[in-house]
Amino acid sequence: MSQPVRLAINGATGRMGQALLALVRKDSRFVLAAAITSQGSRQLGEPVYAGTVAPLYSHGWPQDDAIDVVVDFSGPAGLAEALTYCESRGIALVTGTTGLDATFAQRLNASSQRIALLRAANFSLGVAVLTRLLRQAAAALPGWDLDIIEAHHNRKEDAPSGTALALGEAAAQARNTTLRESAVYAREGRTGPREHGTIGFAVVRGGDIVGEHEALLMGQGERLELVHRATDRSIFARGALEAAHWLSARVPGDYDLDAMLAERTSH
Image (cartoon, rainbow, N blue to C red; front, top):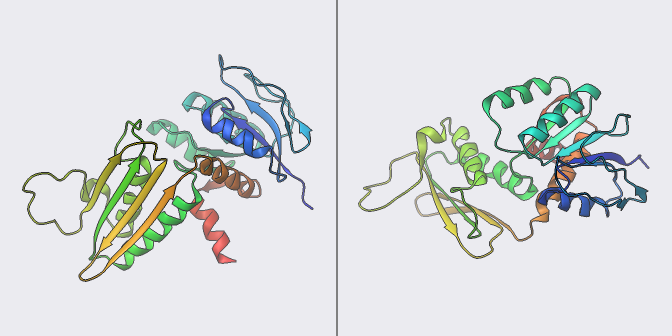
């Protein structure tokens, strides 16, 4: 039996950090090596995961070589610290931190030359498969109309969702275009006939919907519907742990969930 992966969670007091801590407790593939918190965040106790008491480093990183992979859901500043730490020790890094500027994105690209790095805005494995299927369908049916419909809870502030936009971008790339050229975000009044090649978006906000995404490909006399519905927010933490376990055995490079799925389906 292989040794468990030694995991560090950066952003441990956040919503995703707490979900990860709860899952790691039940997952024998991992041992929690560190739970990193930001300055000013509340203190955590000394939890026991996978039979091992995990040392907690409130605002600093361990100085020994006790970590195989870091999972980061912190923020730009927290990610910068994690990246520096991982680069200095050759540790793999999984991050779902968003809101990064172009300069930081360039730094991540450069870091992937030295460490195994996996980035995703959405760690749902179902959404990753949906994106894969939509990319294939959009390429195979280039003349069909395409709309993306998404629904979320009534507290969500942005629209369309980042996942909906990522789905649209994947479809656009499959058709050799971009959302800048093809996206239609609103329809109202006498809009006239649909322009060929456009990708439409529709948004629903209400109740406590965790997240739903539907891609409609519409041809003459037939329609293809690709749908993903999330009912439990812990799916994102589960996906991040799957990514961490997979990435821990990878050589330096820039990876995504699609790369993990491609390896699985090739076997």
